Length: 454
Image (cartoon, helix red, strand yellow):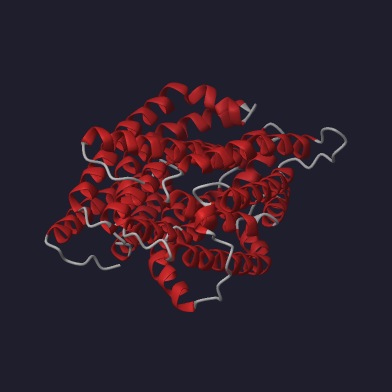
């Protein structure tokens, strides 16, 4: 990060930082995207199994990663305030915490995965593929979360291009191992959708080792000497991270888990409907990386300016990011509308499933518009370390408004499975409106010199 003086300089710096984050997020999600699309070419059961597995894993991963994302505003504000000596200590504590989180999720998964899948009333083959896909992916949980902690350090320095390079290096490896393990190429066993889980685990380890190399060997990261001195575990620092990170994690979890909940509820429909629903969610989530990248960038730049007490600059970055995000949301909606038929063919060769995917994609256009408003605002508020009220707003809008609305429409009207999507759209729209109000309140408080409660 660096000081900017004009709007033109801010636009240039913002885009320079945002584009690598966007490419990184697209690359990371592309692994899940290729898991789903390549599994779909192996069969409808493989598509449904991997889609079910992904729908259970993504909320857990994004929610727990959200906890670690607290490191970004903590580090950004430390760097902006010139407290460089705080950085190695904070990064190490975040890494320690990521190890504990990984261990906890693996242990919990060992006990609850089978019962959860049994509750979904899936076809036996779909349940088997979903279970073993998640088992394979589980071998990569530890390096994935440790990479997330180190990525927060890299991004907080404004060096977002580095995480982009790491992801782009890993993506071809993921595609290669997907091909090898899903279809049984080069003498490897044909595992179908299950192979996608093991391919992802291999890729996560690769990303982690490359990230370690950059942090230790490459400037400007090496000058912080992150691993030169190892600090003892500091529960007070963990408390700081968790007090800021848990609301962030729960906010993200409530938004992403609502899709998993809908998938659970939709398990009463046939395999074709489940597969089409998850394929459409997968593609819509791929485009969601646009506003999510905006949010990550806004957290960095707003956190940096707030730490340096330049409130006017923080506000300018906020409106700049929101404007770009809304424009991208409109473009994403247009892409879905125009390309919905060829997109459906990426996921399946079954004409029935393809037609259902196209219907679901029409509804997903409205996701893009709401996310283009709500997600960047979440990033701005995190830059201010305002996380508790957004967490409550997410809980209410998604679980107390969106899900009940979808359940009623799906079960008591002619909308059927599409009723759940209307409910999701309703929850997202309510959440976006509430977050706009919260942003207005926080900016007024900051302008009056009041401390923002975290």
